[in-house]
Length: 404
Image 1 (cartoon, rainbow, N blue to C red):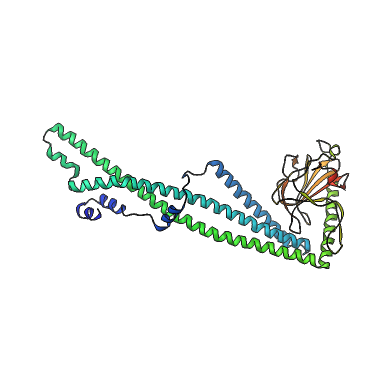
Image 2 (image 1 turned 90 degrees about the vertical axis):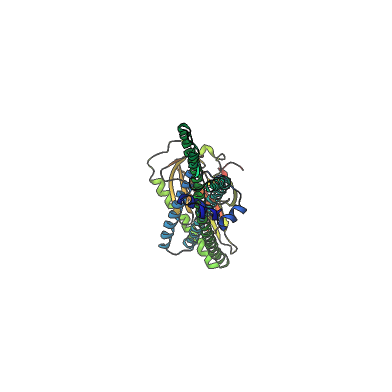
């Protein structure tokens, strides 16, 4: 076919078409087309795009907040609590980066599948068009340079000449339109090939980046675990950590006294005391640390805990146990991210070890809201710290929460 066209067709247009017939799908596309399942070629719906953009924005804000906290911790006195928190912030940073990369990788994989589907559809379309286009080109070649206009040579009647002219013009347009359509299909196929190769390259780069991020997460976890193990094994470090935790409790007591002193007046809403024994749990989990004096370690050190620790999966939402106003929502040494809700009449609930905060100071909340999501305690265990204060004094939360 190619030799006939080169010897018999002088039209530049037809030579371009003959050249286009030789365009084939490259090896990379052929491999993906052979191995992949084809999905819809449609773009993601607006709702999905909005969700993706919201996730990206939230991830960026989360990384920025963690970086800011890391900078603050770097300027603080190097205590065990600060060091443990620094390692936890580092772990969260690397985990957030890994999550972002994995999300980008999943999006690239989706785009790769869509591009593969479009390439497959274009290939099928080109295969369907090719026989008809080739047959018409062969017919034109056999008719010679004049093509359909030779019809005019065999007509001597003026009306028939007009009809033959319109027929020749129409046939010429049909051939041109079909060849143009086939050429556009081949050009689109070439464009999809380039897009496919780029997506494959992007995916390989993201896979490498994801592996590096996983390694960084593992290093951060290992560093924190090593410090925790050292504290567990050394009496001096254990005593130091216990002292720092007691100091953190005292600072928290001082902060609560300042919050109570700064209140403008009684909060408007449901009173707190009538709900003793009927408050909902802040999150679903298992109590791993009880209220009161507890033995803290194998060295016999004891620690008076003003609240309880609830063991639960990291990332689980945490809800207020009663309506009130957020009096504090920030990082607090020894408690990680901490939220204090003022329920009025000197009643407060505290939520510590949060991985992230979902509320701001001064915001009104109730039991349907989320104050944050569960994170990890200083030892690195998924945990929520929960404390209740009534008349300004710590009370056993288990006497106020519903029985499980």
